[in-house]
Length: 500
Image (cartoon, rainbow, N blue to C red; front, side, top):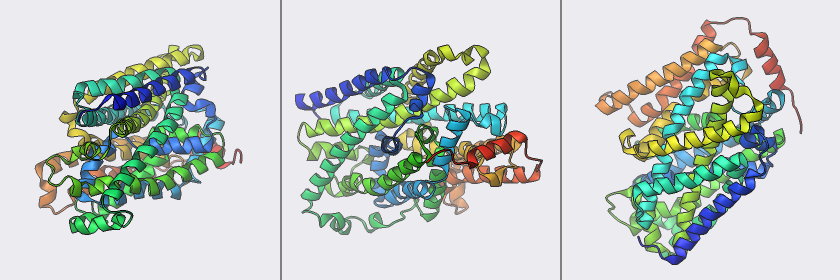
């Protein structure tokens, strides 16, 4: 696709705005607390919008656009709908717990409380495994936006990674979470304008509002089904559980949105806002992708469908706006990830490695250096994305399968019912989940699951987290011991309402 000067100006303005926001946010950071959790002073609507847009990336317009093209409406059911339900159903539980942990234990990282709940070894294992996982996850998102840039503008893949990663590296490193939050808001507005524009153009092309239901009669019948193999009902149930873990804090950046909220009520309201947006906004966002087979029949590579749609449907200027929104989606998610992972490294890992990192006077400098180094490593991973199964393989398979084992001891450690699950249970559950993932990877590659008539996608994604949960519960039950004073004090602290 060829972009003209108007498109280039729009994209340039977007990048310039991101850098200006980063510079503005720089002056709001006086400590690592400001850098990592915005001083614990986020209003609910900013927190909710940031929580929502942090769940999107350019992968939505590459990997998920391909699934919308080939599998239709089922994408909404197993992805957006399950996320919305998982967030709304727990809006008065985990968001509240995270705020109480910040206020009573001064945490800046979601993992800080694990040293109290279990021990330092458990905290370190979860931290190292999670940081490694996020290297691949963020790398996949840089690769996704680079693919889109190549399709929409002709920019070489390598340059696309360097542009999106480089701009993000600048504003995250200098601005911290405040920069992430402000850019999330700006990116949400850009996404809203671009998404509605694409929606209206496609609806108009097919004859008006009746096309919202009418296109399904022209598409293959399975495209309108709620579940479309291999994205079956069992896969959706598994993904619902994974989303329950992920969006309540198993994905550390999403926990940070709640930790940074200024009150418990604000955290719950932020969760409701994010969940409602997940139920409504993807119906508009995905509509052009669902209609793509009618506009672009018989595509050899459906992952390029959204990029080609832009070229087919939009005039110059609007093309630049949509391309900017694609940048916005990826940069929103990746910047959130990077900021929180940097908090984990700075607050949880480095102080254990050396006492010199406990110096509060240099904590802000350490935070910025950590952010820079981690971002650089994710860019390196992005260049190797094909080695790990492509964008969809990295995001759906690797992230979906591995987030559960990491999240189980993190979230269930907050629930009194699991108070007997100590360090051995936590470490065992993580190890069991990772081993299970490795085994299912081998089995699905060899085709053994199909021979056994097992739904391979649901198995590959769901079995690690199921095994992790079983091991966590079973080991905790088998090793029942008197609950330590530290755990009792932790339970008491987060059980008491701290504000309105």
